[in-house]
Amino acid sequence: MTAAHTHTGRLLVATPVLTDPNFARAVVLLLDHDEQGALGVVLNRPTPVEVSDVLDGWAELTGAPRVVFQGGPVGLDSALAVAVVPGEPGPQDPLGWRRVHGAIGLVDLEAPPQVLAGELGALRVFAGYAGWTPGQLEQEIAEGAWYLVDAEPGDISCPDPEQLWRAVLRRQTGALAMLATYPEDPTLN
Image 1 (cartoon, rainbow, N blue to C red):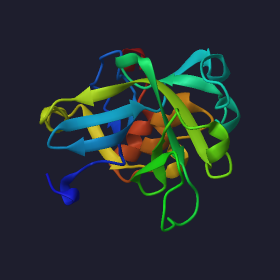
Image 2 (cartoon, rainbow, N blue to C red; image 1 turned 120 degrees about the vertical axis):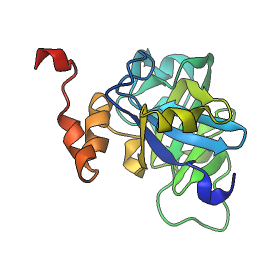
Image 3 (tube, rainbow, N blue to C red; image 1 turned 30 degrees about the vertical axis):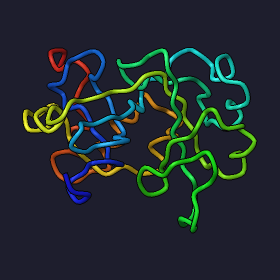
Protein backbone atom coordinates (compact mmCIF):
# COMPACT_ATOMS: atom_id res chain seq x y z
CA MET A 1 0.00 0.00 0.00
CA THR A 2 1.46 3.34 -0.98
CA ALA A 3 1.36 6.45 1.19
CA ALA A 4 -1.21 7.88 -1.25
CA HIS A 5 -3.56 4.98 -0.49
CA THR A 6 -3.27 4.97 3.28
CA HIS A 7 -6.12 6.34 5.37
CA THR A 8 -3.89 7.07 8.39
CA GLY A 9 -5.05 10.27 10.07
CA ARG A 10 -8.56 10.15 8.64
CA LEU A 11 -11.84 9.43 10.40
CA LEU A 12 -14.14 6.48 10.04
CA VAL A 13 -17.71 7.51 10.79
CA ALA A 14 -20.12 4.65 11.39
CA THR A 15 -23.02 4.60 8.95
CA PRO A 16 -26.52 4.15 10.38
CA VAL A 17 -26.50 0.50 9.22
CA LEU A 18 -23.56 -0.35 11.51
CA THR A 19 -25.29 -1.69 14.60
CA ASP A 20 -22.42 -3.54 16.33
CA PRO A 21 -22.57 -2.04 19.86
CA ASN A 22 -18.80 -1.41 19.80
CA PHE A 23 -19.14 0.83 16.76
CA ALA A 24 -22.72 2.11 16.45
CA ARG A 25 -22.43 5.88 15.83
CA ALA A 26 -18.69 5.67 16.43
CA VAL A 27 -16.11 8.11 15.14
CA VAL A 28 -12.74 6.36 14.78
CA LEU A 29 -9.43 8.12 14.23
CA LEU A 30 -7.18 5.88 12.13
CA LEU A 31 -3.73 5.87 13.70
CA ASP A 32 -2.25 3.36 11.29
CA HIS A 33 -3.40 1.93 7.97
CA ASP A 34 -1.17 -0.10 5.69
CA GLU A 35 -0.89 -3.53 4.06
CA GLN A 36 -0.73 -5.09 7.56
CA GLY A 37 -4.23 -3.81 8.42
CA ALA A 38 -5.54 -0.83 10.35
CA LEU A 39 -5.62 0.46 13.91
CA GLY A 40 -7.59 3.32 15.38
CA VAL A 41 -9.33 4.69 18.45
CA VAL A 42 -12.99 5.54 18.97
CA LEU A 43 -13.11 9.25 19.80
CA ASN A 44 -16.64 9.42 21.18
CA ARG A 45 -16.87 6.77 23.93
CA PRO A 46 -16.02 8.42 27.27
CA THR A 47 -15.97 6.16 30.33
CA PRO A 48 -16.69 7.21 33.92
CA VAL A 49 -13.03 6.51 34.84
CA GLU A 50 -11.03 9.67 35.58
CA VAL A 51 -7.57 9.89 33.97
CA SER A 52 -6.18 10.90 37.38
CA ASP A 53 -7.36 7.54 38.80
CA VAL A 54 -5.19 5.53 36.42
CA LEU A 55 -2.29 7.73 35.23
CA ASP A 56 -0.29 10.00 37.50
CA GLY A 57 0.37 13.46 36.11
CA TRP A 58 -1.48 13.14 32.80
CA ALA A 59 -4.93 14.39 33.86
CA GLU A 60 -3.76 18.02 33.90
CA LEU A 61 -2.87 17.74 30.19
CA THR A 62 -6.23 16.34 29.10
CA GLY A 63 -9.18 18.41 28.02
CA ALA A 64 -12.70 18.12 29.37
CA PRO A 65 -14.01 15.62 30.02
CA ARG A 66 -10.87 14.42 31.88
CA VAL A 67 -11.83 10.76 31.60
CA VAL A 68 -10.42 7.70 29.89
CA PHE A 69 -12.15 6.91 26.59
CA GLN A 70 -12.90 3.39 25.38
CA GLY A 71 -10.76 3.34 22.26
CA GLY A 72 -12.21 0.08 21.00
CA PRO A 73 -12.84 -3.54 21.91
CA VAL A 74 -9.20 -4.73 21.60
CA GLY A 75 -6.61 -4.50 24.39
CA LEU A 76 -8.85 -2.89 27.00
CA ASP A 77 -6.17 -3.42 29.65
CA SER A 78 -3.71 -1.15 27.86
CA ALA A 79 -3.72 2.64 27.50
CA LEU A 80 -2.61 4.85 24.66
CA ALA A 81 -2.81 8.58 24.27
CA VAL A 82 -3.36 10.82 21.27
CA ALA A 83 -2.47 14.50 21.30
CA VAL A 84 -2.29 17.52 19.04
CA VAL A 85 0.84 19.66 18.85
CA PRO A 86 -0.32 23.08 17.65
CA GLY A 87 1.52 25.19 15.11
CA GLU A 88 3.61 24.29 12.11
CA PRO A 89 5.74 21.14 12.29
CA GLY A 90 9.28 21.95 13.39
CA PRO A 91 12.47 20.18 12.38
CA GLN A 92 12.00 17.74 15.25
CA ASP A 93 8.87 16.40 16.97
CA PRO A 94 8.61 16.88 20.74
CA LEU A 95 10.26 14.20 22.84
CA GLY A 96 7.63 11.61 23.82
CA TRP A 97 5.29 12.38 20.89
CA ARG A 98 5.22 10.61 17.49
CA ARG A 99 3.47 12.29 14.59
CA VAL A 100 0.69 10.22 13.02
CA HIS A 101 -0.74 12.76 10.59
CA GLY A 102 -0.56 16.56 10.47
CA ALA A 103 -0.68 17.93 14.01
CA ILE A 104 -2.01 14.63 15.45
CA GLY A 105 0.32 12.15 17.14
CA LEU A 106 0.74 9.40 19.71
CA VAL A 107 2.05 10.18 23.19
CA ASP A 108 4.47 7.91 25.02
CA LEU A 109 2.74 7.47 28.39
CA GLU A 110 6.03 6.18 29.82
CA ALA A 111 7.55 9.65 29.32
CA PRO A 112 7.29 12.11 32.22
CA PRO A 113 4.17 14.27 31.63
CA GLN A 114 6.08 17.46 32.48
CA VAL A 115 8.31 16.92 29.42
CA LEU A 116 5.28 17.40 27.14
CA ALA A 117 3.32 19.86 29.29
CA GLY A 118 4.25 22.93 27.23
CA GLU A 119 4.03 21.17 23.85
CA LEU A 120 0.54 19.64 23.73
CA GLY A 121 -2.59 21.47 22.71
CA ALA A 122 -4.98 18.57 23.33
CA LEU A 123 -4.63 15.11 24.86
CA ARG A 124 -6.95 12.13 25.17
CA VAL A 125 -6.25 8.82 26.88
CA PHE A 126 -7.81 5.64 25.51
CA ALA A 127 -8.25 2.17 26.98
CA GLY A 128 -8.13 -0.26 24.10
CA TYR A 129 -8.28 0.28 20.37
CA ALA A 130 -10.05 -0.86 17.21
CA GLY A 131 -8.16 -3.11 14.82
CA TRP A 132 -8.68 -4.60 11.37
CA THR A 133 -6.80 -7.37 9.59
CA PRO A 134 -5.40 -6.79 6.07
CA GLY A 135 -8.26 -5.96 3.70
CA GLN A 136 -10.95 -6.09 6.42
CA LEU A 137 -11.42 -2.34 6.73
CA GLU A 138 -11.52 -1.85 2.97
CA GLN A 139 -14.23 -4.54 2.77
CA GLU A 140 -16.27 -2.90 5.56
CA ILE A 141 -16.06 0.47 3.76
CA ALA A 142 -17.13 -1.16 0.47
CA GLU A 143 -20.07 -2.83 2.26
CA GLY A 144 -21.28 0.55 3.53
CA ALA A 145 -20.39 0.23 7.23
CA TRP A 146 -18.16 3.34 7.34
CA TYR A 147 -17.86 6.78 5.83
CA LEU A 148 -14.25 7.87 5.37
CA VAL A 149 -13.78 11.61 6.00
CA ASP A 150 -11.00 14.02 6.86
CA ALA A 151 -10.14 14.58 10.51
CA GLU A 152 -9.69 17.97 12.11
CA PRO A 153 -7.35 18.42 15.09
CA GLY A 154 -10.30 19.55 17.26
CA ASP A 155 -12.00 16.17 16.81
CA ILE A 156 -9.60 14.65 19.33
CA SER A 157 -10.53 17.07 22.10
CA CYS A 158 -14.22 17.61 21.36
CA PRO A 159 -15.69 18.82 24.70
CA ASP A 160 -19.00 17.06 23.97
CA PRO A 161 -17.89 13.66 22.59
CA GLU A 162 -21.43 12.25 22.55
CA GLN A 163 -22.23 14.80 19.81
CA LEU A 164 -19.10 14.16 17.72
CA TRP A 165 -20.84 11.76 15.28
CA ARG A 166 -23.38 14.42 14.35
CA ALA A 167 -20.80 17.22 14.31
CA VAL A 168 -18.46 15.38 11.92
CA LEU A 169 -21.32 14.51 9.56
CA ARG A 170 -22.73 18.04 9.74
CA ARG A 171 -19.51 19.57 8.40
CA GLN A 172 -19.53 17.28 5.33
CA THR A 173 -21.19 18.19 2.05
CA GLY A 174 -24.32 16.86 0.38
CA ALA A 175 -26.06 13.73 1.62
CA LEU A 176 -23.52 13.10 4.39
CA ALA A 177 -24.38 16.41 6.05
CA MET A 178 -28.06 15.48 5.98
CA LEU A 179 -27.32 12.23 7.83
CA ALA A 180 -26.37 14.27 10.90
CA THR A 181 -30.11 14.50 11.57
CA TYR A 182 -30.64 10.73 11.32
CA PRO A 183 -32.60 9.63 14.42
CA GLU A 184 -31.06 7.27 16.99
CA ASP A 185 -33.98 4.89 16.42
CA PRO A 186 -35.54 5.40 12.96
CA THR A 187 -38.51 3.18 13.90
CA LEU A 188 -39.72 5.93 16.26
CA ASN A 189 -40.03 8.40 13.39
